[in-house]
Image (cartoon, rainbow, N blue to C red; front, side):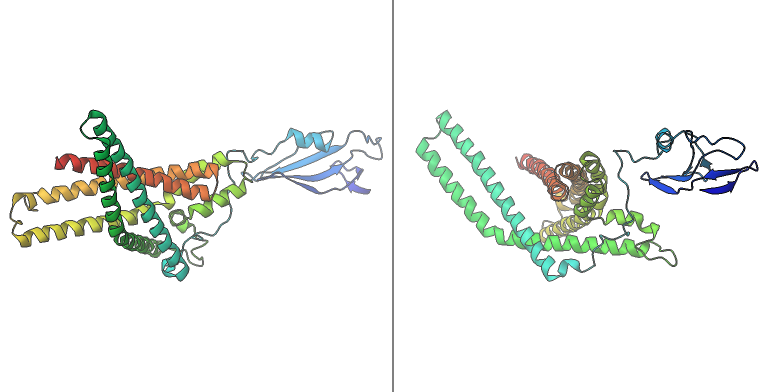
Length: 368
């Protein structure tokens, strides 16, 4: 107990107590707790006076609240900025923390993993296509048998011969497809790393700050985020209780982080497209067909085809980017991390397969 001077000139007994109560984003500080009384007036110990000062982050003013007990006073003044269940508190992660070195894909471990990944994907795609063709072929021969055009023995022999021919063709072309897939992957990755370094060099850095703490690199950080790690970080900040919110935010995060990879993939495919048509035109020109209207660039034949294929490529890549982002969000809702990666690849693969079938159908119609 201590005698403190009052503003009215009276000496009153007081109990000094400092206590801080954490409320998440803001704080309620228990600043002073004393009993009102004086030597001239009896002390009423049943009615304590509590002064709570709330230091708001939006203003520098302090609000005092009078109550009969500290618990009542705190319950009457809830924290105004309590985190809602639909928000994720950001962390002070350094910018460009997920940015990989320029030659990271050429390291032995990464090179082995990328080679295995491309090889397995190419083999699985060819096997899936072969099995799908076999099912369609069996259905076609069954229709022929039902209509009486072929007997069962003739249908079995024809199906077996065609199946063996398709399998031999796959085994013959598979090594070449694997090598081309590996080269394409390395080309896309190298193109993406060049884009990252170009944007990093073009983004100004404030004096006295590194790129990891400069806010000018915030947008570049979005473009270079790793979706797998970002999903794990977001899920960890919510203790796994806000999967819907994390999945919804991962749609946006995955869209930004996949812009450069899809742009690099489009660039490589556009170069392949232009190179292929140049070689085709040069070959026809040497053979003597270069003066015909169908293959003359001046008459617009080949030029129109190149523009059409380029526009189709832009549409397909943007659609794959959008569906990959949606798939990453759904995958994050199910399983943050691996689900994010699998969902993104599934959305990209299904969309690319859809456009490939549309392209094959148009080519079949044109050939007929």
